[in-house]
Image (cartoon, rainbow, N blue to C red):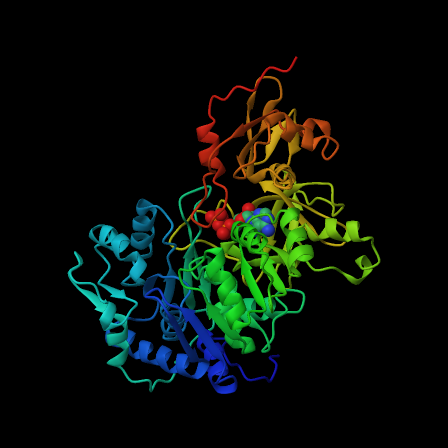
Length: 544
Ligand code: ADP
């Protein structure tokens, strides 16, 4: 027997429709790529998303067609999120930081029909276009005054002209909630990029989950600034969550340097932000140098890579901002776990509570997870046993776009994350490594993440990476690669001594090397494959 409730499909357009009706005057503020700021309301954004929908239909865009974007966090990109998916097409957010060959691969693999791009990316688009024969049109996200003359692209269209030519009268069509809505390729840290194809249903459910108090804990009274780009797993769902809860949204455009961010945080009264650890280290240095403070910012989600305890502590104690550590991936929409305490932990000592906060956190509703050994047997939640992390749920990918590669999917319906983790008795998951980065020394595993977190706690270290390199006796041993802070001269010996008493003796790296910078992926993560190549053939110093 079915329930007797209205069977209204969950659709992304409904989120903006809701905001336009019930939070009509709430603002969306953008730092423009062209310079200056743009401000409008959810009501106005909704009208423009409808103009865009009409424009796309006139261009001949049909259900399921892929429409690419190469854009910063800005109001026009926001309109694309809604205008494209709202008509049943797929908004394919492309990460402009990828190499040109990867971009060409992705655009051709997705068979994007049109690509909307920001002014910043014009030189990039000029390079890509000759290799993307299926793209029928390139549309520049700007107004007539900023259109380039001349360009090697024969027929670039102007976004504002396109919109101006269309009416804002539009009824969002009703369709099956499982219809594809957006497409995001994984950054390919470990492999060729793979497309994760989200649906309206998965996106709306993920937004509900993200809004929960133990998740983002945001409400209509918040002002959210997503530092995480809209081309990185849909800015972790914030462009959907903000209209759902009706809060003010601040979009930083290309200005991701610490000074520009701080200025926006202060001027717009931002209360909540989200991004990868690298960005926050930059901001922390800036705040210390300027002896600056935040007027309104009190909460932040840090994820995408392990959040070093030193960062958590500094934001807490020096800046009054509570960081929640979160874990996720493109395949989980992306939120998987968020770290907030359970009531039984509130009576623990401050140090014990802090140790828990550094973990990746508890599973949110919608994500089931388990850890398994090499034979697929489930491991206990004792905080010690580590194994492969598997997840499943209504906003977890069930396959990749146009790919029959099923290696990451188990026959009984779980997704293999490629991460290695422990889960403690309270359900707190702790990532010890990516399975490909784990260091196997004498048959035992060493967590490179734990060692990196310790290294960056040293005052002379700006950034650190630990990789396993072949060793004649132990099969692999850890090498610590460090970028020193400017004007510091910490020695290799000092750094190795720093680990003494903080980790098991055999976890201590065998050697330290200094470099000017570390290689990063397009989403700001350490690119350990490259680092392992750079140090191929490395010989550890002989210990007497
Ligand atoms: P890619 O898989 O191409 O790097 P994703 O952005 O989907 O792109 O990255 C997901 C991966 O990032 C996770 O599988 C995990 O290894 C890592 N990750 C994400 N959040 C955290 C975190 N809080 N701590 C440690 N690793 C994390």
